[in-house]
Image (cartoon, rainbow, N blue to C red; front, side):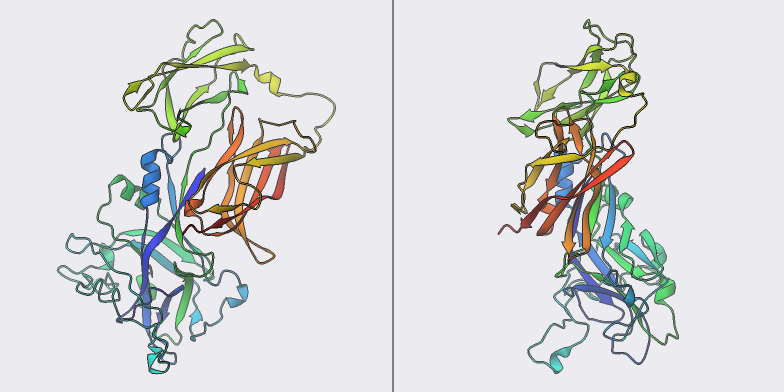
Length: 488
């Protein structure tokens, strides 16, 4: 599995019955309560945002992201809680006197259409909740320019103030809470949890054209919380916004299947095996006009019964896979052949492609004896990114990983179960995960993974490697480190 990050192209926090705009505030503060002993505003707030999925759509159209071979894409909205780093903040108060909220539910909803029409909106230029200009003439970060509770642009209002009525009191063309699309609901027990909304069905529907006219989404407390009365305190939860000066910018995380585990060098009869075909145009990966089909031939070049016309799937751009499961062992060990047919690129028909693989007996995988295997130690070489290299955030790098027996220079190991993990560091003891443990692609000539810097925030990155063998899971820390820098 690989992941792609899509970032927000606009966002804003709107406040109940207020023209205040706080778009550029580095923190999204969702609050509720009606305490009289704190500074305005009173009531509750909602957060609205839109996501730039242009690059995600490009990857899909180019075949970099394919749903042919896997179970499809998953999409998760991730926002980091500003209280997630310090448990001492639980049940504490914020600088403006609000108590940190606990035991509540947040909803993720789609910005509704009004009378069947989309509601485009502007994010605004505000920062503060309060107008400090009356005290500090040089500090004018307060704004009432749209969007806000009432307005979506200078000349357009929301169909219903605040996007929807949480009491379901609207009649006629008004928008009630019961009429909006709830994408997901998340419970917060302690109030320091990060947002992890599941947007899989929602985003896939937008990508496929099933959902049209979407102008973004919103996050809010459930109506039962927004409508609480008789409060003696105001409560809030905060998340880093797109304007944060930290690494914790919110994003949509898309996970998709593009793993390559080529069995051509270790093809066992009566076993599940995958074979791959790699397609290039002058060294650049390219797709066929349609998926090819595959015939399996025995050592004599004859078709193997039950293994003809096998369907293939597109793993990622220029990579096709065929599953060859439970082929009989009658002739093993010996050479077999896979014949790929129906090949064409841009309307040009190509010759069939015949490859070979060694059909091995399954018992050759087993070792039986009186001694146990000793733990294995590994060493790694990388090609594609240099150690401590400064990489532009416009690059796509193929990182070749040579896995070898430790303390040797040439004893490479190809049939190894390897994983990689990518993270940045914050301070001396904190690792901020960028990509969780992911299987390294295995081809006939080595291992590799793809690192796309275009959706990564400039920072110093570290790569850990993990190898699983003989009941051992060995993790090798900071095997590779590099920096991503802005391109101007």
